[in-house]
Amino acid sequence: MVLVQNTSDKDFKVVYQEVEYIIPIGEPVEIPEMAAKLYFAYGIDDINPKIINWCCERIKMANPELTNLTDKDIWDNIVLKLLFGKDVIKKSKK
Amino acid sequence: MVNFAYATPYGMYPPTDATGAKDYLNSLSRAIPPYVVAQNLGKLSPLTRRILANAEVKPISFPFISQPVAKKTINNVQKVNYQGNFNVPSSIDTDLADMATLYSNLALSTLLVTDFEVKAYEQGNPNVLYDTVKLRANETWLGLIDQIATWLLGSRISQTEDTTQFYGLRDIIDNGTHCPDYANINRTTNTYWNSYIWNATSVFGNNLNAYVYVMRALSKYQNVASTMGMPDVGFTSPAVFQALAESFTNIERYIVADPAKLEETRQYEVTGIAINGVPIFPDPYITTNEIYFINWSHLRLVFCDGYAVVSSDWKDLSITGKLAYFSFIMFGGQLFCDAPVSCFRLQNMPAATGV
Image 1 (cartoon, one colour):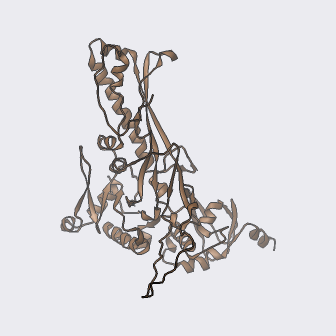
Image 2 (spheres, chains in turn purple, yellow):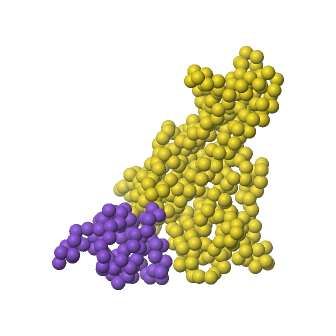
Image 3 (cartoon, helix red, strand yellow):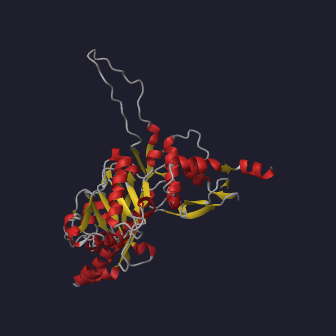
């Protein structure tokens, strides 16, 4: 499991192996590491446009209300505004 | 010994006085090619029948299957002038590490016949053997294929992955959110190993005719994954199929939605509807409101040699304290796709109520 905190302005969710994980604004939550990889490219070093495209495909599938956003909108305004693991703890200490 | 002669079907052969009761039972023991199994099934699952009828038997040892996969489009084309110069490649452009490796799975079913039934047959009452044992044998076969159909058209993941079960279509036609590691290749960084899954209403809009969703999905697929060619066929639940048929006006059902047939010999034909040239058929083993679009060039069932639907000879159980004979049927292989992106799923389709 990996701790993730949503600092964007949208609540959203991810679905992994039939389980739905809500990622609310502000509050850190735990999600499976594989789900973080699939949806946010968490832990992937060489992120390329194809990986970004598939992450956005998955986010759109889990969140139909985001379907009309472009990949760039989703990546810049949602995925890049997520904090993971140690970063979440650092932020909460501050 | 198990009979491995899967390639040549053989049927009943007459027992002799010398061989005794066991040979009567052996008349029920067969090694049957997958296509014969498929053609003799009842109206169970047209998709399973199609998969079985076109299965491959590979001369490979249980339990491994390795297969190169379609990773990317390779474009090595060069322009050549009248000097005739070109660049000689210095390395190969496929990575052998990207070999899909699957473990085969084995399904085994059992059939027990008591010595009393055999003796009754020997003493002049053949109907005992013919009617009751043959019925049980037949039901055992159907039960096995019923289970196989459930597996092949379903998933081996239910919160945890059951690696002893065959992969199903739901594991293969997936974008990683259900089956993140199909055939030992991870879907996060290996983007070529994903299938598209689209939600009909959120991607294409609300309140459209069902066939419009299919047309738009096929157009979208052609746009994003056309190097794979178009899928050959779609399979869906009876409720979605019915809604699809009803979405045409009466005249369109004859003109636009031309009926298509799934080739099914010996017992029956399955009639479907062709939309944009892709025929769509109903299958009762699909219970969700989605359509699976399949490209047969990239999806097939692979049997392991020696386990391509074979039944064993009869084992005498008297040594275990039971007056009976026992036989088992084995079905070993794996559902394999070398390019999951060649198939896709259209979810959240309209469904007819009461079907």
